[in-house]
Image (cartoon, rainbow, N blue to C red; front, side):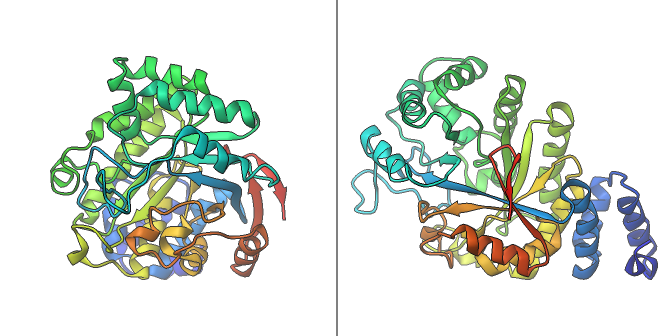
Length: 369
């Protein structure tokens, strides 16, 4: 038994810690106790125990880049700093040709993944976006295409008049390899009414991911934290994900996304501290005992905070990105021009005491650095 666990005086915390050390699943009530009562050093130790079961001493990253086709969106979520209406000087919309030009700038670089997400454009359906995927696939056949949040998928598939499963099969034929985790926000429907009232429901988000898993399309999952939610809301969110993962085994990783306050209608809330970030990473790693990986999205929280998170259960640093995303820079992230060379990511990982491993999109090791 770990010495710190041995010296826990609170009986409930000690029981929970012993369950975690023994590899047993904790309940929602026990997860809530960890959030409310466990001190940060204990959470770090417990999250480290769970992390090592999945990844040992390794921390993963990949060589990737993002494409954000548009920030014009049919939705106007209160927390969003990215959405701009038609005619706004800060709005954009890239054509297929412009997007292919972005892809071509990486022709001489060893990237393995393109990540495509953006606003839910009112004019385009599944065939418009699917034909984009096929053009990318034709140009660079080995590039893994991770594209479209469940919210985007709902709109484009519905607009074309297809049921979800058929629409996903069509996109898979076009070239879709996996789905990112965006749009989950927080699953509690009452909270969704306050922060993203017109967006697809939590049940539909879960249905889209479950359907994708059933036809061989893996995905990621997220949570938006640090706004008006409580710890109970976070646990409820993760329990729904854990239950779905029990059924499908289709999620690759979980990505906690921090609410950022700049340039949106919820700015008055401010932001939670890095202490809360680390607490959230740790409880996520402990509670989601069937998710193989927990990711710290460094363009959101910054490089130093992401490095600290590696000691609180995180085993993935996302990727090089190469200054190709604006979603969090528009919300006030410290990383205004997010880009890291492989050498810098590896240095951050080694400095934290871990082994950097370059991976592909499905977490197959490419190279240990």
